[in-house]
Amino acid sequence: MEIVIRSMKREEAEEVKKIGKRAFSLVEGMFVSKPKHAQVAVVDGKLAGAIIYKITEVQGRKTGYFEYAFVDPDYHGKGIGRKLYQATTDYLWEQGCDSQAALVKDDNVGSWSLFLKNGFSRVGITEIVRQLGVLGFLSQFFCNLLWLAVGMDFYLAVRNETLQSKSGTGRQIGGYLIVNLVLILFALYRIEEPGIFLGAYVGMLAGIIAVGRIAAVPAKRKWQFRLNNGGAGIIALVNFFGGIFPLSGNWYPQKYENTAGFRRDLGKAALAEWAFIVVLTGVSIVFSSTHLIFHYISSIGEIFLIYRILAFYPFEAYGGSRVFSWNKWIYGVMACISVLLIAYMQVL
Image 1 (cartoon, one colour):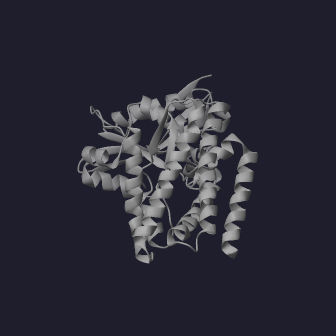
Image 2 (cartoon, helix red, strand yellow):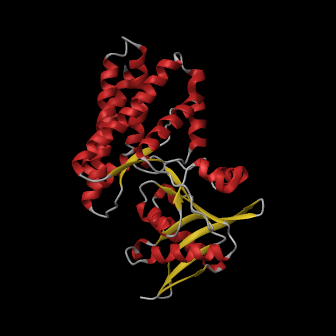
Image 3 (tube, helix red, strand yellow):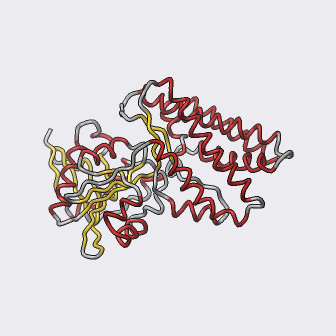
């Protein structure tokens, strides 16, 4: 099998678009448009994958941005992605880029592990500003859709620079709670008792984190908590205009395995988190007339249950897709219980 990585020809753009739509889920595939620039993988003369990119320039500094990276499902497992990522990274450096950036879903280990192997680091907002400057950060935030990318992390490589990666479970958990506290402030203008609501909201988020970690203990893996910094802009807007939308964060094993056991361990932790929300919401419904905090918990729980049964982008990061990937029957039962509880709350 001969694998050739080269620049896309103009007449190949439509075929690249079709492969991208086939490689992604239905919702994500809708956003893949006809590319202007891409590096493509050609296997035995046939297009088998591509990385769609663009180059932006701010204050004289060029940043190569990976918009989409994909391999045709018929060619998975043949090492094409590894060669495609490496060749594209090298190509963008050759084009004079001072830095390279990408947004990757938290559970898309295949992609983010390849970025790490090619010199990228998973970085936070302060490191983006330190490396790219305020205008460079704003370019990534708005032009490259960091503000909209719910459940995604930002990966960055800078020529001849060692970057400060996001690390430390304690710091990640603290950042997760603090950032969500700041984002929910956009909703407080419509809350009767803001202090009680904030206590219920942060308490539920902290409880979900704790239960997820406890449920992961039997797996006997090394786990870390990861805050996903994408989507803060859309989350702030949703909170302001009437919703409740948390920035996502998840427990993740430090070592990836493409095995059924790995998917089971992720699914069990997500299922335990869902069960915690169900129990807490159910108890709060019973006691909702005794104190306002129970009313707030049940309302928040109802919304969280909706997110947990939507196993597609951009809600994958809230755990439902992990259960679905592990066991579709268990996911079906989970979804039915959630729908019944939500329906019951609507008729109260």
